[in-house]
Image 1: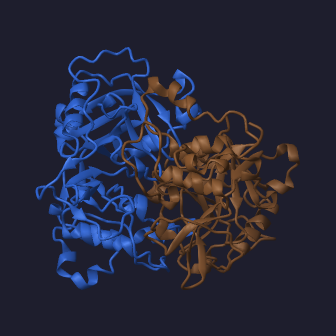
Image 2: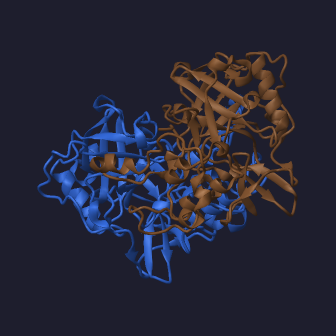
Image 3: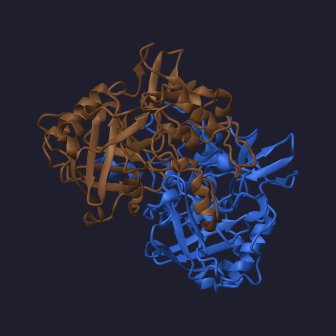
Length: 318
Length: 318
């Protein structure tokens, strides 16, 4: 069974004893060759996400671009972050430059604030930066055109004129201004800054571990999304100093290293696949989640929030 | 400084070195006697939540009703849950009956699913229930009338016709049906069930630890909200079995006991106060969070999501 992150938003609340039988309906089994759902559009509307994924085709999935995928190695395992050079080209380039000078190795996660973010940086501010830059012009939004693949969500969003997914990332756009930006959903990764818009740059990073703080959208540069190992960040003990900073240096979580997947030999890379978000299957899954079928659900939501739309990730070959 | 849960949604992302100066503006100091904000309505709109709370009056706060407040004692500390007899009278009564027969003592948290819920129950299903009931008729929604204090949020909500706060709880209502219900925001507590609507009852409980799964609204009975100690639940290691269940019994988290505050002597009770949600101050705070002031914010959100509206909790006398 693929270890898909989609389970995170899909499973209702069966009592313990019914778990086994319930799981039977979710098990994805081995991958099928044909995308059966496409041949049965009428039936598709009633299928669960699990059933739709089970019927997915190989072409419904993509591998993350190794040159824009990060591995943050912690004591307990690897956090995999996919970056978006489309939305934040300068920040992505700078984070990569910092990584290639081993800037993050041995630094620590020094903030874990409940229902908000974890954050990591050089708390001592002693570490020199040689190849990368300490600060950058902000990339809060980008100009978009038809080349931005955007699967627009039909549902109303309070924070933006239009929301949807661009290459797997939750995003928003405003046709009036022609600008698009990434959205602060669970698992999104950005570059912390001080009061000045251009005071960030990628030397201090954060990941969202709570209910989407969408008020941060267009206020701070997002550039990536955790696609695997999210629980290694979200289950960290919360810091007890104000804003979730750890009180004492010994409470911080050491970052063994951050690497770019491309820089590692193939056998050391995580074998992940992400569901494409520019496909009929993705739209069908979104619809399945908007009004969930199955015996458990009694009241249809008839709505889905951008940050509840699953972008499933699976381990290749499982 | 009050250890207020409002910080969880209020703090932006300053770099580490600027933390000290930034915090200066958030420090609440000792409580003032007069509610200064009410006298300066023009200025109030520009104040931060921290400033508004600093100027709060004693009467802006309430103590949770001891007879409807639960203490879940874990190895690492106490989780405090306020219950709502208005929204789920039978479930609240039954949970109290179960507590008073020590039903939960020694049971364990056996599920922790990332970005979703933690759940606790008698996994063995061997424990007898004598005073309480194993299952109940569902309480997915209630009929409301003018007696339900409801501070309606002006902002559009995708899941419900109207949303807001009722006695501190995030809630929704539909004037067409005359029904109201609690909303699945972060920290909300409910009674798990199987496929049948009336298969829950309170012997198996869950708390939301991720982005609000609002699609569960009106599908499962909510009856409470964690008002303190949330991090003890949200930072638990995630279970690695499907749906976040712990693989092995030794991974589960033992519940030492669950008690009703009323049943403990005064000196053993948590001294918490909750900001009233039926006051001008609460509306002013909501407005302050809708468009946050201060130098850090560059792009106003002009919107707030129900589940991002803070309901501050503080320790009495701090």
